[in-house]
Amino acid sequence: MFRKIFVIALVLVTTYAHAQQKTPRQLFPGLFEAVQSSDIFPDNKTFVDCTPKFEPSQIMKSYNEQKGKTGFDLKEFLLSNFTPPASPTHAFQTNIEDGIRKHIDTLWQVLQRKPDAGSKLSSLAALPNPYIVPGGRFREIYYWDSYFTMLGLQQSHQENVIENMIDNFAYLIDTYGFIPNGNRAYYLTRSQPPFFAMMVNLLAKSKGTSVLMKYQPQLIKEYNYWMLESATLAKGQAAHRAVRMPDGSILNRYWDESDQPREESYIKDVDAAKTTTQALPDFYHHIRAAAASGWDFSSRWFTDPAKIGTIQTADLVPVDLNCLMYNMELTIARSYQAKGNKIQFMLYLSKAAARKKTILKYFWDEKNDWFNDYNWTTNKRNAIPTLAAVFPLEFKIATAVQAKKIADGLKANFLKPGGLVTTLNFSGQQWDAPNGWAPLQYMAIDGLENYNHHELARDIAARWMNLNIRVFKQTGKLLEKYNVVDTNLTAGGGEYPLQDGFGWTNGVLLKLMNRYNFDEKKGE
Image: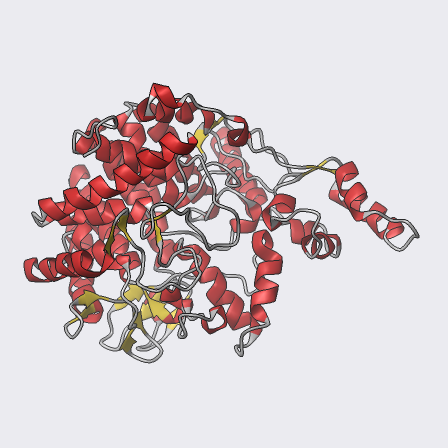
C-alpha cells in the first residue's frame, strides 16, 4: 500500500515539475528581449532553442553586471553562455540517382531523434521514446505534422516508430493535459489541429482495436481539454477552445492561453502589433490562435486579406477543427464499443451525430457552394474560400451533392499545375496562394476518393507528385511547401526561409506514390 501511494505521489510531483517548466523569456528577462530584438540570430527561434551552459540565475547575474559596461558585446556574451542548436538535416546530402524512395527511407533515419534525457536548462520538453522531427529549423516533434509523417512511416513498414510517436503524444497528454504545438516550453500554452485520434486509428488498422482501448484514457483527456468549460457557456459565448453557438450547440475554435508575443517569433509579432488597431492582448491571442491552427499565417484569418493587423482567428469557428473533433468523438465511441461499454459508446456516438448536424448547419454556404468558417461574434460565415473545405469530405460528413460541388470548385478554382493552392488570395502569407502544402493535398485527395471522385483525386495527386519529384531531381531535397501556381518558382511567404527535410512531404508523397502505383522515373 505504501509503495502504491509513493508511486502516485512521485507521478504527481513529476507532472507538476513538468507543468512548471519555464520559457526562455521567463528565465532570461531583459536578455531575451535584447537578443530577439537584435540581428545576432536572424531567426527568433534560434535563441529559444539554445541550451544554456550555466544556471539561468548565474547567466542573468553576469548579464546584469556586464551589460552596461563599455565594450560589452552581446553576441560574444551569448556564445559564451549558450550553445546554439544544431540543424543536422542541413549537413545531409542525398544521391539523386538512387531515387526518391531511397531518399525518403534514408531521411527517416536523419530525422529521427533519440529519447530526450531532459534538462531544466533547455526549452526542450523531454520525451521517453524516439520520434521524427519535420526538419530544418523544426528540431522537435510537432503535433499535426506527425500524422502525415506517419502515413509514410506506415508505407515503410515502420509501425514501431509510429507507436513510439503515439506513445510520446500520450505521454504529453498525461503530463500536460493536452498535446502542445511541439515539445518546447514556449509551446505549452497551445495545441495544434487534433490529429491524435487519426494517429490512433492509423495504428489500429495494422494492430487491431486493442489500440483504441490502449489510448482511450488519453483520447478522453484530449477531448476534455478541447471542451474545457463548454458546459457552463451561454449562447454566443466562448471560453478557451469551446464556443456555444446561437442554437445552443457546442463547436470549437483555435486558442492559445497567452496574450504575449510568441517567443519563437518575438520580433515578428511585436512589429506586426504596430499595424493593428486591436488591443494588444486581443491581437496576440489571435496571432497565437493562428499558430495553434497550423495555418500561420493565412488571409483566412484576416478581415482584410492584405493586413495581418486585422487578424481575427479566435473569433472564427473553423470547419477543419470541428471535423477533427467529430472524428475524435467517433474514435472515443469506438474505443468504448471495443470495451463492450454500450452506454458510453452511445453517448459519444450521439455527440458525434450532434456535431455533424451542427457542422452542416453552420459551415455549409448554399450561396457559394462551399464549406466556410463561421464568425461566432458576428454570426456570419467567413467569405474567404479555403482548402479547409475538404475536411467534411475526408470525414464523410458532407452529402454527396455537397461533395460534388466541392469537387467542382476545386477543379475550377483551386487546381493549379502543381496541385491545389491553399486559398485564392495572393497575400504574401505562406498559407495562401501560390503555395500548396502536403497535408492539405492529402486531405483533399483522400476526401475526394471517399465520394468516388477518383479522376480528380488522381489528377491532383499526379500534379503534386510530379512537382515534388521534379524539384527533388533538381535539388536533392523535399521541401516544406511548394509553389503550385508557377512550378518553376519556389514557395514564398512566411516568417522564415523555405525549409527542407521534410517530414509531412515525405510521408504524403510516399503514401500517394504507393496508392497510385506512381513510377518516379516516368511520371504519371
